[in-house]
Length: 518
Image 1 (tube, rainbow, N blue to C red):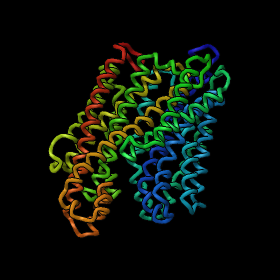
Image 2 (cartoon, rainbow, N blue to C red; image 1 turned 90 degrees about the vertical axis):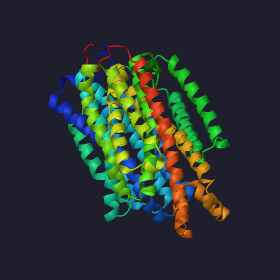
Image 3 (cartoon, rainbow, N blue to C red; image 1 turned 45 degrees about the horizontal axis):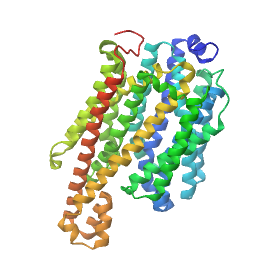
Image 4 (cartoon, one colour; image 1 turned 60 degrees about the vertical axis):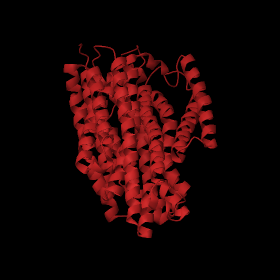
């Protein structure tokens, strides 16, 4: 054990048979598959849901955003509670809340009720996500086995993002939008039964007193930070007083939380983990990758549907090469790290993803075709699959009794990176789209009110083009959107190359995720 008498999970990992350990990985990875599917299914179900429930524009935003707000605010606290109360218990409670919230959709007839359900799903997700990582950390005491387990975990995460839109599309073709939620119920029932039978209990014996003030500071600070970033992104401007107020609140509460955590003997979140260069390099890789890539992939999905005219299901199919390449790369990355070293494999993977982004961004927009997009997706997926190495480095750089903290920090980095990327790169794309489209002579010739609406989004421009029977209006909007997407991709690609270089420099020479030396 890392510290005598502090962690009960080590014994659990040691006495479990190899078959049971890998069955446990299957259960934990399936949890992640369900969560990633759920997050992507919503984008497919939202139009039909809006048609039936008639939510306001603000309510639609809350339906989308409330999940990540709750998740970000509770990750740290729930990871700390799991360390004390029992990680298996926390995971099973998360399953139960997630399943119950999904079932409640049967009784839903208002947008407010959907918002409440999404908030409950966020509560369950905050219990599940960091616990899957911490349990893998304590079940697999051998670094080489743990690296393989984390590669499976990472591969399944990528597959969930690809499978979600496809499953959502199939469900909505045959059932109502509620099916996008109800699909979770049987999956949760299986997960609970398997978790009870297979997973070991694990907790920290000497975790210290529960710090209620630190938990409140974490909840308020992270929620305010994520909300502020989202508001800046949605408005595509910094002139948002409410967002600045939330950002100020986040700065005060999170600074207080950091100082309180550093000074505490048993902090709610062990920030001293960042003193370990291997841990910090893994965190930078996770944060930088999601920041750089998530926004570009969202823009690409819109481009496929609105510019190329494919259906949501077809768009999902066209995006699957990225997930499949990521899954394959996640599996082969650990063996490659034994040959070339973890530092080289992770940095090279991140650089490969950056090159893929640059390929998407370079060249005339009119020459951008599906074949080139598919090649880009394979490059990006193959690169991001190397994040399995980053996860292994994060767990390698944290002691066993801090596994919950490490899991919470990694999941927070993914969430925060995605939110920042969508806000910043998405805003850059929106500003470029408006600036270029505003100069189009056809747009300037139509009613100013309609012109303003068309400049807000590509979807609005296409709809107005159809309404006025002006195909040239849509053509100009398509060109502006394609250019804005390419600029965002270039920015993301350059950032990915910078992250790759930084990770290479931060990671100590000879770092091995398998316990071998280089």
